[in-house]
Length: 294
Image (cartoon, rainbow, N blue to C red; front, side, top):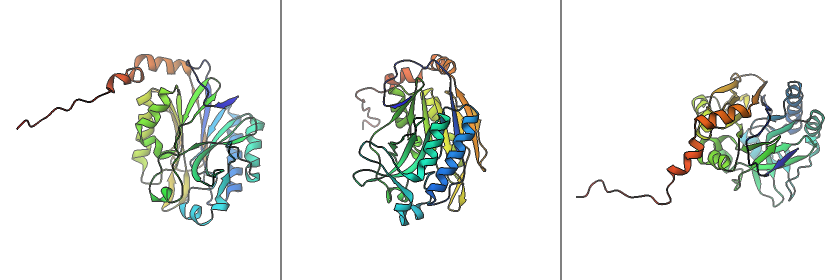
């Protein structure tokens, strides 16, 4: 059972098998991209995956010109409760339900009040699709001209694991992952879209967030496309010390699988107490010391 924002008071007791998928998404072809996502779900399920993370804006394709020119073709609508009922996503919902896999996937969402968000949808193993997170840190005019920034954090609960959610540029802000860790998250999930040329930052931020908070990180990046929207893959799962458990090549479609092990999580948090010690580095008041007393 997957639920949102339910408290987790202890470390998980069982291994959670996760997948990160990357594949090319055609701009504006929401139904076709959803069909690709359904095929990735089936491939992940064959390896026993319980949770699959797919890239940022995977459903409409991360292509700002198309997102700007044809919103009705690219967007899905969410009702006031966050439920998404769009026949173009029926195959994805069926795949998630058939294989009992939870799927986190990037989308452009039109909320009930008409606001447009760069979002993450959760296709649940019960066949539902929900709008669960809106990107809080929009990256550049390509996103700020199209979307409103989200205002709330989100965690998912699955099989005793608490999973924070961020989207791409959110991962560049240590405070975002730290807030999730303080709320009890054992891992962060990052649908992302790094273009060719951003490899250094892609390979730096997400293992850093894992080590900062002694948590697992699942990073699913876009791949393919044409300049300037050509993406560099490299999807990965990092352990709580920032080491890659699995890592995809920079090109090509694939689904990688890794086990999030609570024994490893407990061991690392015991040996590396940064998360527990973090409060010591954040005094309520800061002392100002004059350098030049003139």
